Length: 284
Image (cartoon, rainbow, N blue to C red):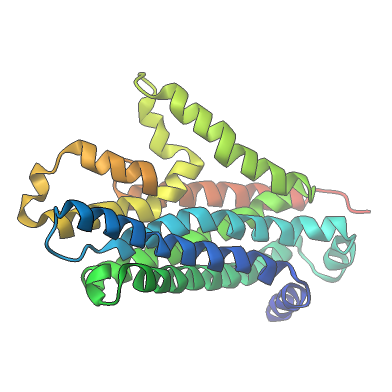
């Protein structure tokens, strides 16, 4: 097993895919952090708050929910790319059982997913510092920042693992790129809008992308409101939460741990499906 894991790392780091996906994660994270400048400017203009707002928490949430798609694409392409390049035959013939190959890929891609998560948190925080001004107050209490950052790293890891399972199931290198983008930004968005104000509205937070976004957003938004409102948080209008969730993801009054559990179940289902199908699939 260690030899298989080393082989997977060798495959990853001798190709351009891992850093090609890391670049947009870093750039988008920094830009999301920098957006704090616009919020600070607006708040200073209306002079509504006296203290520096912990906008860094929301920046990490925003950057994570954008960047996770690249972790998914990396995980999916790491498996589907083997079918495209016809290297999967040698991989399966030299490794037995096939489940060990899947486990090795999950391990290697999981480490890369963790790397993406750490880079995302660090560059989003850097962008927030440079955009909104220096000072730890921009991130609230250190415990809050660590909690949101940790949730962001965990979210990136789970998206990468789901991507591995998805890539192993689909195997088509073009489809594993197009399908997640179409689903996340078209299909699920359409479904979410369609069920609003209906008896099915409760399913929204349990859809895959919504659950993935909620891992960080359903933690960051309440922490942000708590830091701003202080003792008056219970009296904060629901509309304030919903407005923040609209921009930064997540769902009002839906716990982050439930989003984590829901998305982990999706990831486990894809991995289980990949194991079941992969051990029976013919190879050329």
